[in-house]
Image (cartoon, rainbow, N blue to C red; front, side):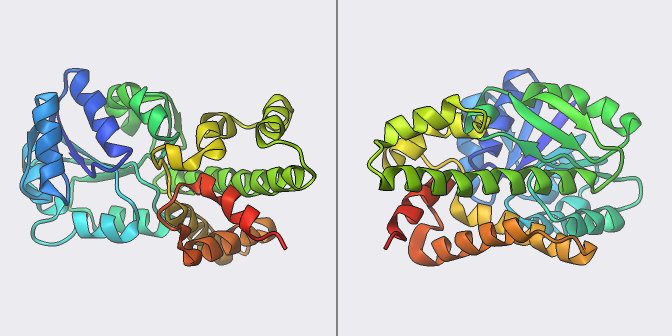
Amino acid sequence: MKVGFAGLGRMGVRMAANLAGAGYEVILWNRNPDKARDLAAATGSVSADSPRALADAADIVVTMLADDASSEAVHFGPEGLFAGSRATNFVEMGTMSPDHIADLAAKAPAGRHVIDAPVSGATQAAQDAQLLIMAGCSQDMLAPIQPLFDVMGKRTICLGRTGAGAVMKLAVNMLIHGINQTFAEAMTLAEATGIPTEAAFEAIEASAACAPMLTYRKPLYLDEAAHDVTFTVALAQKDMRVTADLAGKLGVPLPQSKVTLDILTEAAGAGYDARDMAAILNYMRGKQT
């Protein structure tokens, strides 16, 4: 099976490398062509000149893109994925709105299938093939692509229908960003009384309140500047904005998540947009009066 992979950001580059390492014939495309060529050289893969060329060469195409706009640009148009002649399955693994997934599915050429299969897990999980994959498709549609998911992740949950993966990813990320915000507040409160940062973290990490994301982000929380960015404040803001839009359409109140979105928007406007989401701790420290 020839696998096309479009979108070689922090997550995609690791996922594509795992596919190549598992012996799949991988064809790469990225908006920055040098990145695709460099990864191709490092993994024994090849690169394509356009999304259309990618879909001309591959049996299945995986995309790992940042948002609806980037996904739309890659799929549509005369040089887009949907203009390709060979690939029949298009698997979108980025965090997208359910409306965008529905639009892709509705506009896919006859005989082509769109599967939303976003992932949960940060860059280390992507590198270690420990991602959770939330697949918006039936079991029958999942079966032929499950081997690919097994190479990239530790578990796949089949959610039965197109768009359900996108919804579930927003729900999971809503909880993650809420935990991140509440953790920042808890740490700021403890520190304000003189409790040392590392002691406060140790207590939270040992408590019933600890979530796995707090542990794997611990180095960033303790010394953000010394570590690479894994997930930006801007992406967290995007997640929460898309979630709020979906909730508004469904008439579902999200009062706590609205506060999280407001803080993320404030932080992004204050220059934190390109920093890791762990930087919300430093942002909250700076808000003390």
